[in-house]
Length: 422
Ligand code: ASP
Image 1 (cartoon, rainbow, N blue to C red):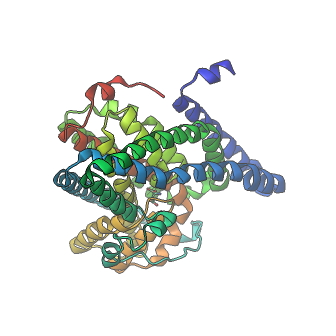
Image 2: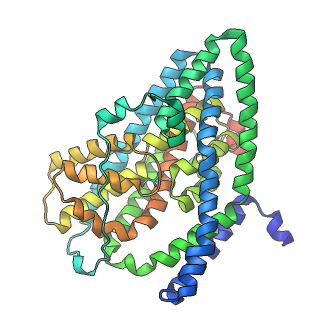
């Protein structure tokens, strides 16, 4: 017990995760038809623990993003600077997503994922086809007609727009604005304390989420889809280490230190499978462990959680080639370019929540004329891949945030190098 208390939070979460995997696999083996395991353990205790933990994180996202972004924008104090940072973030987010999907297409094509796949052995589940928003709808929808409903629905881009305008107006309001700013800065501290409290529950929440996933998924669903699964995992790995590594090196930041500092974010993203729910942990880590100024992180992190999904783009690239191969459809160069463009644009309009990648995938498949029903083939392994691609999604956001902060002189190298653990 004493030793457990002395462990860092990251260490505790890691242990919880490992025990969760073991218990989950065990329950999967013994509990398939066991009513007690299914309804009391999985559907009862673990369901409650996991759901409360995720709800706790989500509860903080909207207030935290709004309050910290208002403070951040006001600290920037300059609309031109804001425009420049926004432009850089958008450019880098789109660029990294385009690289991610190109890499995925190349790998999937090279490995020939899906060739010889026997659809009769796959665990197919029905896929509810929800229409993805069109690009025009996304553009129009960026400005909230009602900020309160934007907040109650958690519409991140709308909240960002409202917070930016609010922050800029605080700067313009002079002396009176300063009172409001002080209040927001103090409020930010208070909400950060709430983040600490919810994070301290993470070992239990993570244990519940991971156990439940491994108890319900089982390894047997992966086997028929092994070529798809491995291609996605390989592309995720190469993109994180290769692409992000090169970008970090170019910005003269040590990739190894970056990845070490990111550990708590990895664990939260993996277990919740939601970039949105990970925002509080990302912000805390970027500010306290990476040395990024709040003025930058409070803007680029929520923006990235919404519009930047490199891991998701990778899944879409591999899935498209896989489905095309299974249905025996030849994809030419123009189809590849369409996939790159559609997947990159699709990521802008969809929020970082579990499973949303599949909704975006329908858009891509439609664009290149592949049957949307093909998604049913890969859905069996989607939860596991969702967890992994979410890790890459949030890593991309953090990498771009560090780059921008460095370029804007809003970066404390000594904090970045300290490698202090939570
Ligand atoms: N779960 C992912 C995220 O929140 C999105 C997805 O790929 O489904 O970033």
